[in-house]
Image 1 (spheres, rainbow, N blue to C red):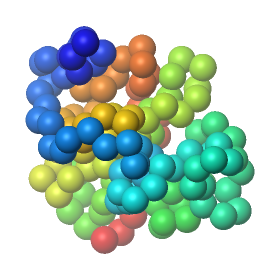
Image 2: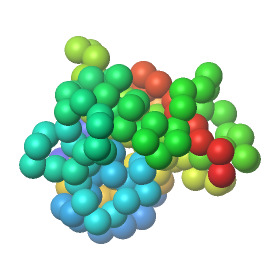
Image 3: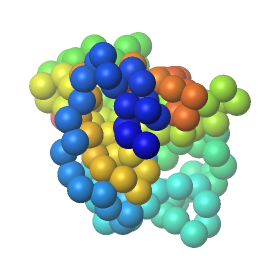
Image 4: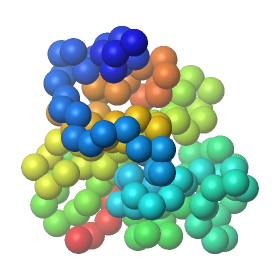
Amino acid sequence: MSLEDVFPNLRTSGYTITSPRDPTYNCIAWAANEMDRWWWPNPSYYWPNGVPRSETLEAFTQAYATLGFTPCEDATLEFEYEKIVIYVNSAGIPTHAARQLPNGRWTSKLGKFEDIEHTDTSGLDSPVYGSVAIVLRRHL
Protein backbone atom coordinates (compact mmCIF):
# COMPACT_ATOMS: atom_id res chain seq x y z
CA MET A 1 0.00 0.00 0.00
CA SER A 2 1.38 3.42 -0.96
CA LEU A 3 1.16 6.75 0.85
CA GLU A 4 -1.23 7.90 -1.85
CA ASP A 5 -3.54 4.98 -1.09
CA VAL A 6 -3.75 6.06 2.54
CA PHE A 7 -3.69 9.82 1.83
CA PRO A 8 -5.27 10.29 -1.60
CA ASN A 9 -5.03 14.10 -1.43
CA LEU A 10 -1.25 13.80 -1.66
CA ARG A 11 -1.69 12.79 -5.32
CA THR A 12 -2.90 16.28 -6.22
CA SER A 13 -1.30 18.43 -3.52
CA GLY A 14 2.17 16.94 -3.91
CA TYR A 15 4.76 15.59 -1.51
CA THR A 16 8.37 14.43 -1.24
CA ILE A 17 9.72 11.70 1.04
CA THR A 18 12.50 13.33 3.07
CA SER A 19 13.76 10.52 5.32
CA PRO A 20 13.80 6.76 5.61
CA ARG A 21 11.47 4.91 8.00
CA ASP A 22 12.36 5.43 11.65
CA PRO A 23 10.41 4.05 14.65
CA THR A 24 12.31 6.22 17.17
CA TYR A 25 9.99 9.24 16.97
CA ASN A 26 6.48 10.06 15.79
CA CYS A 27 4.66 13.01 14.26
CA ILE A 28 3.91 14.66 17.61
CA ALA A 29 7.62 14.68 18.48
CA TRP A 30 8.59 15.69 14.93
CA ALA A 31 6.28 18.73 15.06
CA ALA A 32 8.10 19.65 18.30
CA ASN A 33 11.47 19.33 16.49
CA GLU A 34 12.43 16.18 18.40
CA MET A 35 13.78 13.03 16.78
CA ASP A 36 15.00 11.07 19.77
CA ARG A 37 11.75 9.96 21.41
CA TRP A 38 8.10 9.15 20.79
CA TRP A 39 5.56 11.66 22.20
CA TRP A 40 2.14 10.36 23.24
CA PRO A 41 0.03 10.69 26.41
CA ASN A 42 0.35 6.94 27.03
CA PRO A 43 2.55 6.26 30.14
CA SER A 44 4.96 4.24 27.97
CA TYR A 45 6.04 7.35 26.03
CA TYR A 46 7.32 10.84 26.70
CA TRP A 47 4.75 13.50 27.57
CA PRO A 48 5.52 16.96 28.98
CA ASN A 49 5.32 17.30 32.76
CA GLY A 50 2.13 18.79 34.08
CA VAL A 51 0.09 18.05 30.95
CA PRO A 52 -2.84 15.64 31.31
CA ARG A 53 -2.12 12.25 29.79
CA SER A 54 -5.28 12.18 27.71
CA GLU A 55 -5.94 11.85 24.00
CA THR A 56 -7.74 15.18 23.72
CA LEU A 57 -7.11 18.25 21.62
CA GLU A 58 -6.82 20.28 24.82
CA ALA A 59 -4.05 18.03 26.20
CA PHE A 60 -2.10 18.11 22.91
CA THR A 61 -2.48 21.89 22.76
CA GLN A 62 -1.16 22.09 26.33
CA ALA A 63 1.77 19.84 25.44
CA TYR A 64 2.85 22.22 22.68
CA ALA A 65 2.20 25.21 24.97
CA THR A 66 5.10 23.91 27.11
CA LEU A 67 7.27 24.77 24.10
CA GLY A 68 5.77 28.24 23.66
CA PHE A 69 3.07 27.47 21.06
CA THR A 70 -0.26 29.29 21.28
CA PRO A 71 -3.39 29.06 19.12
CA CYS A 72 -3.62 31.29 16.07
CA GLU A 73 -6.14 31.95 13.31
CA ASP A 74 -4.74 30.13 10.30
CA ALA A 75 -1.86 28.25 8.73
CA THR A 76 -0.70 31.15 6.53
CA LEU A 77 3.08 31.54 6.55
CA GLU A 78 4.26 34.26 8.92
CA PHE A 79 8.03 34.72 8.72
CA GLU A 80 8.41 35.63 12.38
CA TYR A 81 6.57 32.50 13.59
CA GLU A 82 6.93 28.73 13.51
CA LYS A 83 3.56 27.00 13.11
CA ILE A 84 2.21 23.53 13.73
CA VAL A 85 -1.19 21.99 13.10
CA ILE A 86 -2.95 19.22 15.01
CA TYR A 87 -5.28 16.86 13.14
CA VAL A 88 -8.20 15.10 14.79
CA ASN A 89 -10.37 12.23 13.59
CA SER A 90 -14.16 12.26 13.36
CA ALA A 91 -14.38 11.55 17.11
CA GLY A 92 -12.22 14.60 17.90
CA ILE A 93 -9.21 12.53 18.98
CA PRO A 94 -5.77 13.85 17.96
CA THR A 95 -4.17 11.71 15.28
CA HIS A 96 -1.33 13.72 13.75
CA ALA A 97 0.69 16.92 13.90
CA ALA A 98 2.67 18.69 11.17
CA ARG A 99 5.18 21.55 11.27
CA GLN A 100 5.42 24.40 8.79
CA LEU A 101 8.79 24.91 7.16
CA PRO A 102 10.33 28.36 6.49
CA ASN A 103 9.39 27.99 2.79
CA GLY A 104 5.68 27.65 3.70
CA ARG A 105 5.48 23.93 2.96
CA TRP A 106 4.78 21.38 5.72
CA THR A 107 6.71 18.47 7.15
CA SER A 108 5.17 15.37 8.70
CA LYS A 109 6.37 12.14 10.24
CA LEU A 110 4.01 9.37 9.25
CA GLY A 111 3.89 7.13 12.32
CA LYS A 112 6.85 4.72 12.29
CA PHE A 113 7.35 5.42 8.61
CA GLU A 114 8.94 8.19 6.59
CA ASP A 115 9.03 11.94 7.02
CA ILE A 116 7.49 13.81 4.13
CA GLU A 117 7.36 17.39 2.94
CA HIS A 118 3.92 18.32 1.63
CA THR A 119 2.54 21.40 -0.06
CA ASP A 120 -0.27 22.15 2.35
CA THR A 121 -2.15 20.74 5.30
CA SER A 122 -4.99 19.31 3.19
CA GLY A 123 -2.66 16.70 1.69
CA LEU A 124 -3.11 14.56 4.80
CA ASP A 125 -6.86 15.09 5.24
CA SER A 126 -8.17 11.53 5.26
CA PRO A 127 -10.20 8.99 7.22
CA VAL A 128 -6.93 7.97 8.92
CA TYR A 129 -5.88 11.42 10.20
CA GLY A 130 -9.11 13.38 9.87
CA SER A 131 -8.45 17.08 9.35
CA VAL A 132 -6.76 20.05 10.99
CA ALA A 133 -8.50 21.08 14.19
CA ILE A 134 -6.13 23.78 15.43
CA VAL A 135 -3.17 25.86 14.27
CA LEU A 136 -0.53 26.85 16.81
CA ARG A 137 2.40 29.22 16.51
CA ARG A 138 5.40 30.46 18.45
CA HIS A 139 7.63 33.42 17.88
CA LEU A 140 11.02 32.57 16.42
